[in-house]
Length: 201
Image 1: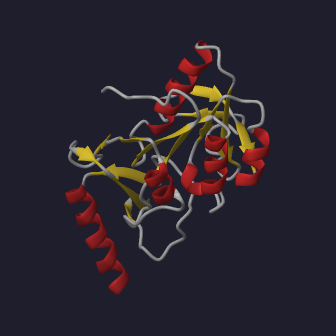
Image 2: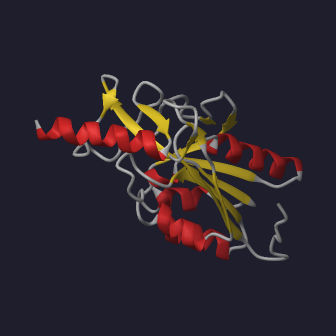
Image 3: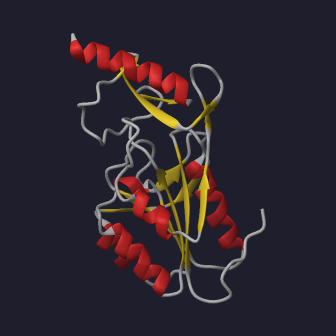
């Protein structure tokens, strides 16, 4: 794919998709290349995401890169001073001010790479991701492998005791393979129907 990177000024790249689609791995890959090019690189991640390592971004496949855990988007803005390229991991977990933070960084001439879930476990737009997507110069929507049928997965199914979780649960619940599966549209809809049936009982 040919991309015309702006000759001057900053820009925003968004990497999105369901869980287990390689978003963090792609974020790490891009920022490692920026480091090789001699750029000063910073990755920020929300403090709430403590699944693997608070001092690193770690992909489900095991790739890792040093990161700074921040309290909120304003903290991220303060930390970004002096860097050329800034990665934002798990962007959906940040507060609504992440959009203005990213726009300010881009306005300062920085490259920002944001990675996150575009949909929550209900299939609804997640956090500030829709606003970041519509402001991005470049967007990559990744697919995972459906844990049920092996097809192309674009959704994330939350599980409770191995069964689809009811939709009335909290939107943010940190977890990995024990709590979530990547699913294609058909398998997700089948799981969602079971969840609705269970809620009706």
